[in-house]
Length: 196
Image (cartoon, rainbow, N blue to C red; front, side, top):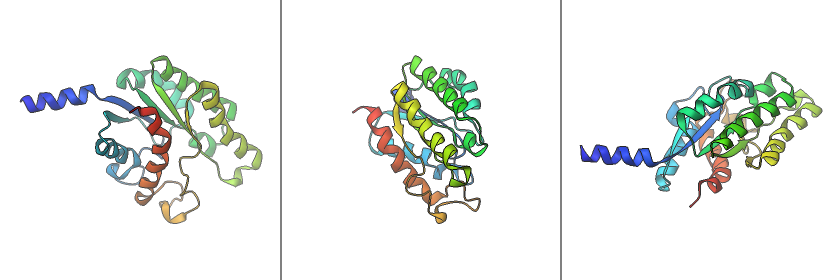
């Protein structure tokens, strides 16, 4: 019983990292344990960093959906760090970039108002969306990060985007073998937000 109580206290004391994304963070099409978010939990344990991970990512989520549920999600998890990895579905649907930026800003401000540190994870669109849209889309993440002084990772799929073998048959969702690479990419930007 004492061991169970000690384990509970250790868990209760751990600060929470909230992953707030879409299917790219929800382990779509692969086992949950194979996703980069589960791998992040393992790395935190290995490095003895006192954080737990809450994955509130939903497949198909847009920044609009994320903005609508952010307050309730923050209330539920009380995170110390929020990783915002939304926007891919906005881009795939060709939604207005100004609207996406406003939604991202709303999510970030809500997290910051509760004292959480934020990492914005950028995304890129395929070139067939046109140069004007793809450039403005990519820049939107950097602009919000700069304006609201958050951590910033330019591209979630860095190092795998042009490697077909790293994706499932749909050529949209990363395979299990891609997940450790995604984790390494996220980790470089996330680690400075975690303190010593």
